[in-house]
Image (cartoon, rainbow, N blue to C red):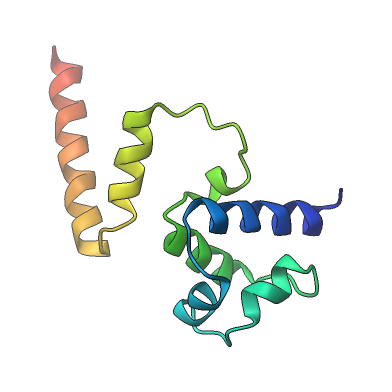
Length: 108
């Protein structure tokens, strides 16, 4: 199985797992309703920008998209899912909070 086939298979799996339509995903990332269908049929390959949009829509980390057997705990998965729902300003705040916690832990 080549990369395009693996990508198409994984995308189809994630769409089924999330119970969403290919058309909705296509339109949500700014393409025609057939865009995702063309990817799944291995006619086209998404740009990197579109890949990130697909991941965000599916609430999956890019590295997780290619990792069929993720070792993340359920808590890790829930945290990642919530992080993908935040905007850039909120993510910066979370980053600062994590830095403060790490600094506090380093002192002890």
